[in-house]
Length: 137
Image (cartoon, rainbow, N blue to C red; front, side, top):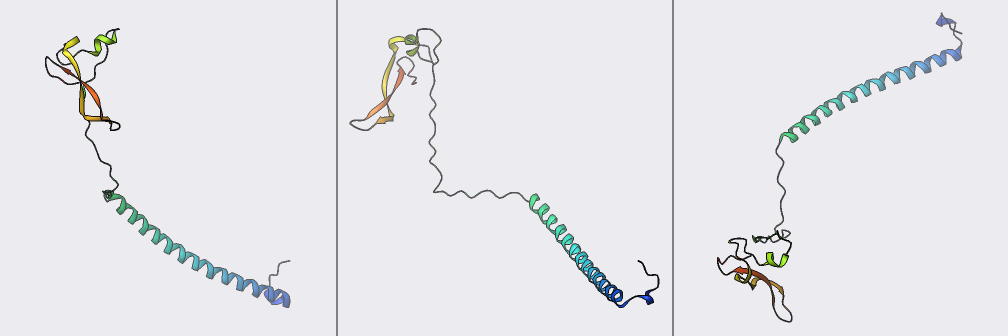
């Protein structure tokens, strides 16, 4: 039941009206505080976005490498490889890729730069040398 005239209110209704008016004023105060907070947060958000753009435009720094962690780099040897073209692999095994000499003109010697085993005695890798052009492979 709605009252058009506020003078005819009962004491309970007046008390309820005062209570509701205080709640409304408290809610308006909270609304003002939240609007201020929203404004501050928007300003902070804008500043942070500007900082992000500045950081993205800067070049990335190179990573510091610890010299103790780096591995030793050994240069690779250039070795000529011979791919078998005939069915008889034995003949292609003794053919110089440089001059084409084959057979007994290719001899096999120890490669003293590459050691396979130290014990019980030193065992070296083998390399082939052409006796005609002195090409090693």
